[in-house]
Length: 251
Image (cartoon, rainbow, N blue to C red):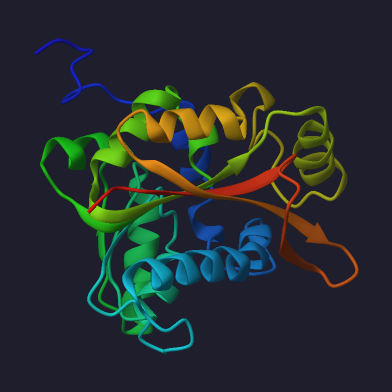
């Protein structure tokens, strides 16, 4: 089979995998190098929960709002999204190409008494194996892959009929360079220097085109901004820096 065949092609960037492997021990330290993700988690979770509940006819306020649904978190890292989704009742699979991240996630889930299926694999390999899920997440991942279109195509393939694909990333604008790189990495030091590369950022139109090419329909675009006064992330209509997007597959 050729190297460019959909079954074997990969979007892994080895440098990005190594970068996040070195951060494995920091995942569950809310005051550490991943503190920005801990602060970002509530707005991400609410966005995913609300859209999923609306799609699948669930109550947003139910403790087990995602019960019976299968969720795949691509690029799960240490499991920051997987664990709260499992607590909402979902059957969660988390995948990451960095084995140290997977081991960190497994250990923390075991300590928390949660049954989560963590695997060291890729979206492309799962898609080729025929696995499918009600909800597929790729949050803060697309800006780290080597081939956006190939990666998004694999993510879309993993969505069951009637299911949802959620993605979150950073827009490629001068504002995002100033805030997400200069501000976050060099001034505020929220993230290690070199976490992001501006030329890998993806515009909303580019992402929407990639999501719809495999047959999905984009249903929502939402900006996210950091509220300095309240020290938290909130939704906004401004997509100039961080944003989230939802796409659905027809039933």
